[in-house]
Length: 228
Length: 228
DNA sequence: AATTATTTTTAGCTTGCTTTAAGGTTTATA
DNA sequence: TATAAACCTTAAAGCAAGCTAAAAATAATT
Image (cartoon, rainbow over all chains, first blue to last red; front, top):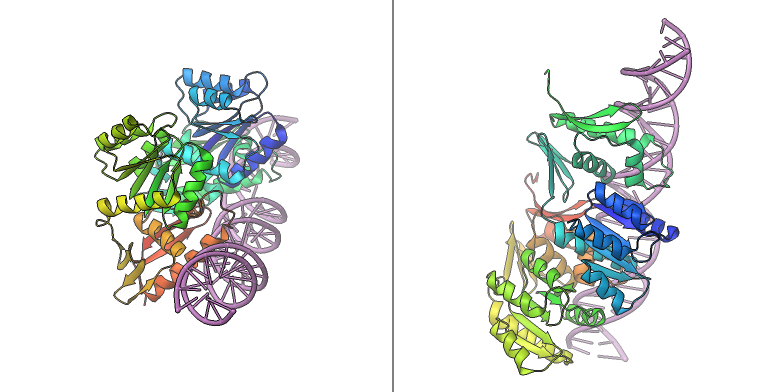
């Protein structure tokens, strides 16, 4: 599940991002409204968390822009003020929910779950590329040959790959998304998981493979000449 | 007994939800009309409590939509105004009962009991999965081997599992549904009840089991290879 | 008030996911 | 073709999630 977090206060942003990652979300963190807008233009997210007070473009502006552009991704507004005006403004502009700071972590998680469940639960429960399917609910990677229940990190890596087939994803991007910007894990860990995934793909007799592009990253490609 | 509570005023919603949970209902709380509609689409409830004044879609609209979709779950309308017009409007649209705010807790409970008794008592008095049955009236979990009377929390956990066999239910979802998301109980408590239930299932010689998916949740699965 | 039933916490244990480490392989470049 | 850097693979150590028994706390009954 992919989330965009737009919150300018760094320490709060880091704390939230870490919590979300611990709860198996892939998080992109941005620190101002303009950044948020440009991230929303390229990436596809399952949910967006917007602070109201941000430099360059406030949360409501970002929200209005994305709705105007036809982006219906569910949005949770964060606001320090609990004034009715702000709430109404947010909801009128197309927010799905709001939360006033300070908030309980549990409540944030519950609201994100509710928001993403209601809006998008059904459509992308299964990702398929080639003869391989990934169930985003049960974490099962399967083909007609059988299936594996993926572990967490493994799943997130495969999810990123399968959501962008043929697209190059850099090692740093994996690290940033899944482990977080300031994680002290070695880059090596990505290689290890790539290796695990490849082994499973072979066992599943997949007609797709994870191709490495030296110095650039990885991409999911179809196999045309299975010489077996 | 599963209820959907749609009430946008947070503090009131929390209070009602807590009271209902204390009275052995499983409560899903939502805070606007759209959420209510999408919850009604997926879940199956024994009763619905709808506030009239809500953002995005008011209670009457929600009610009309669900009736139009053929959903005959009993509905109790909550309204702050005591005007006849509102009441009539609600009942005309297919509500089973109404209550004007403020109301006495006892009255709310009595009305919910009455409403659910008349309309839906019959259909799902027994849930069965595999060789195991759960009586939702007497709280008895049974097989041909014998039966246990489950305690409250135990029952609610088993009910959630048996209503969605093979489906993954996250630990947080259990917490949210049964304890409420603002409960301060440790997540641990879910593990404890899972353990109790498993022990009983084994004693009942069940051909179903509760499977854990690390970091994801639990699911009720059939056992194919009982090696005994 | 005492007993019993239920719910929650505690704590030690087990399991298996995650990460590191270490040695191997490939590819680019001198 | 030698070297280095990037990448691959496996095994094992480290660590967190989950399990369970038992005790403590709370609620319901007698």
